Image (cartoon, rainbow, N blue to C red; front, side, top):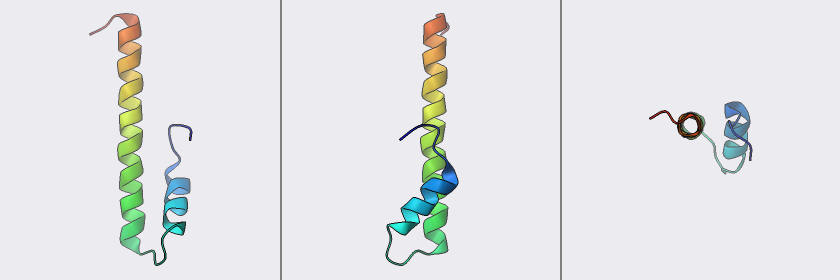
Length: 55
């Protein structure tokens, strides 16, 4: 898996794995990927700051 994750692609794959997908499942998948991508970007920013010696 590569980051950042494409939200639409992830939601489609997530819902495909469910037997009866509902609108709430789509919303949950999009919120999940939002949290994952935010954590990714926060980690990238912290890594850059550390590499530059910025606290």
